[in-house]
Length: 213
Image (tube, rainbow, N blue to C red):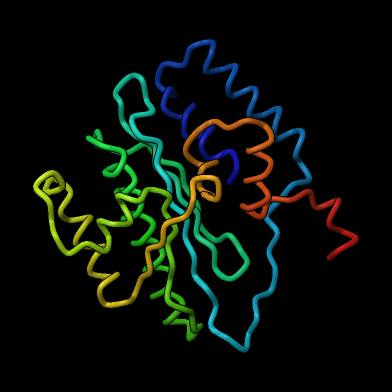
């Protein structure tokens, strides 16, 4: 999952790659070669209580210099384990950072509710799903019953998430930007920040964990 953003970026130039794009691909391959023993850590969840279903969503507004489209990123955790993640370029140009973040919020909300319905069919109890977003405007839109004129072009996303929040089937919570785990899926980061968030995605060196698990 930690290379999702990089892979998403280079895949946008598949039709006509330049030398810089090939260099980026080779850098990704060098990273994979150097982390060949890394993998997702999957831990057993408690069986005597409903499992938490938690999502983190983020967006890098107008990050593409060519068409000014934003990049969405999200990760979903079932209990202690990462079960879904993505980094995607948005299909429309967002007029504000709040709109870009809200589109990411709507997408992860749909994903979480689908996972919850699947678990319900499998008779697996879950707690009320919770989504963490670092944009206060997007969080306010999810709770505010007033539809402002400047947000009418994104009505469907707003009503979808707000309906779930109102009927208490979803909780949308603000999280400080420094605690946004989906940051690694939307933008390039410093090495220290990248390694910190890679741990949050539950990606560890399997060789170093053998003594603990």
